Image (cartoon, rainbow, N blue to C red; front, side, top):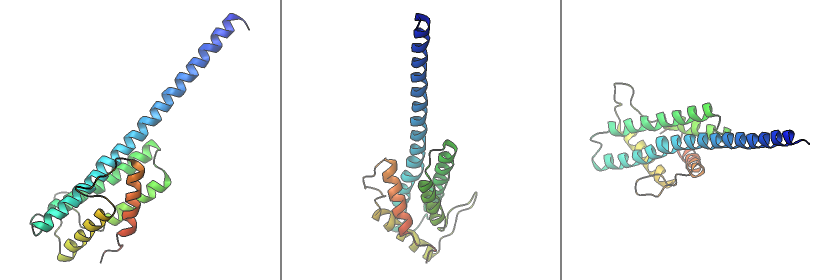
Length: 169
């Protein structure tokens, strides 16, 4: 091999290594984005929902719209997580199914629509209180250590799916 060919060969190898590194870095960043959306927009909002339900139980449901508004935030977060994961191509089939089932089950509860608050009946309040217990059982709630790990969250979501009745009482 001539010196010129050796040089071209080495430059080619170097460029290929650089290309592989850039692609790997991009994939890592996409997975990070997907995980952050699900953790911040779903898991954290579920923790807040559990806390708001507990607060409303203590306050005799004086501001029930806080709970229904937070549930809307949870639903929007799940939708955003599914959309982001689909667009990035990083959401597995099982994770997508888990999120779809969770969305369907949580959407059974009264939640606010644009410019109108949902009115809660006594049955709705009881269902929210049961949801609070279920959230705590799966390890989601205030003063409970939660993991920011995607696998841990998806396990909690799957367990939550299994424990929420469909349809509600």
